Length: 499
Image (cartoon, rainbow, N blue to C red; front, side, top):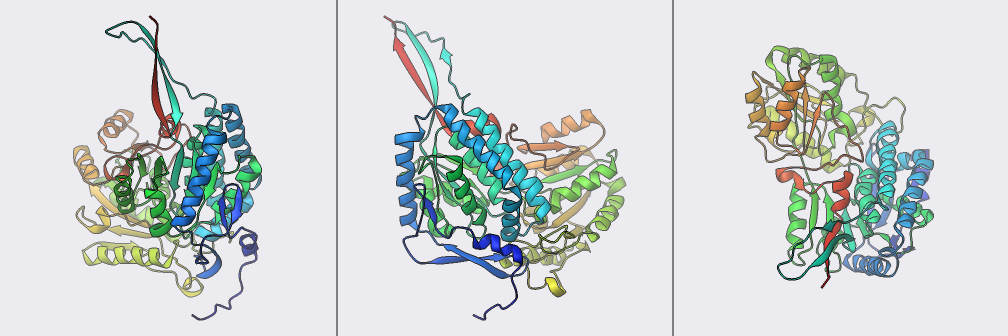
């Protein structure tokens, strides 16, 4: 392998200060083997650093540390003390937001403004929200009428125990909070397996968790390959429930692994979300909404509005305006102030996106703009130009399969019944968007769409209080809100005989 002699960006010094060990039992420890994984700056193709390639033996150590912390400390800790740890973690994220955002941008590729003002801002709010929930988890008293005798009955919501959390590479820091926040508030302990190619912010998170005062072993972090460390988390008998966000294909594997232990599984999976623009929509808002729906984070978003259905009378205008907006996007390194879109996360992902666009064109779609990799100085990185495809049919791969890149398939429709049927004709059901000034029509369409989240005259809007998750092959269970908290608790009923 040739040695890359290009100079590293000065911000890469942030990476050099990160731990290069596993976080188990409150300590940074070496992995069982010397195997490592290279992590790359996707904007340059240069190696940033190496991280430990944890194995099943390392996961087992983490599970044992998490079990001890659960049984000895965390389960019975005063709820307000659990809440204070989460609130302190939220404050530390805010205090270190610039550094964390730079780490995330170097590792994932997204523009720094997105890392700081979307990822970090939302992450601290999630931990703060669930910090408040720690003292508000309660059961019910029940008006029971036993056949024989009398009784007082009540329920308790109790933690599962050890939670295995497996997170993807597109929003690694933020999506980790969607699992750790509610699971920790409910009294569980954690074994976290971050994505193998974007683990760096999780290592910094381990340092902040220790600084926030979490007891040793409450959160354990094992980096490694999905087929080794991830598989070990999915099937470990000492883990009581597994929460996974990622592709539908991997979700199926995790569900199959759970059969061995019968532990419950929470899955937030892929999507091919429809975004519907009616002729009466405010087109200024619809253009910006459709643009944001597909091009944020280079289109590497599970709920990306990748299928744009536009009513025929405004179809051409929408296409022209979107193409003009896409052509104004500035590709570049995420840390450069002029950049408005960064690279894809890896060469594999770049090849995947390019392959879908080529297949779409071969099937008869027209590339209105984009449709190529980065050129010139951008060529060493994993860039792909923002792409609009027109003339797309519903049966094409680009309209049916999740691309996970900056590729928008634009299609026209003539009436509401037609577009609802076409929007629902997919194996996915994560999200959808509707753009119209007719609020009655908006509600009627929203109620008919098979999606876990429907945005009306908005897109990609999230709040810690509102549950998020999918229908059909987009998974089951919910992140965020009270439903997200309840996913990490189980109900116990207690009877007291009164005779």
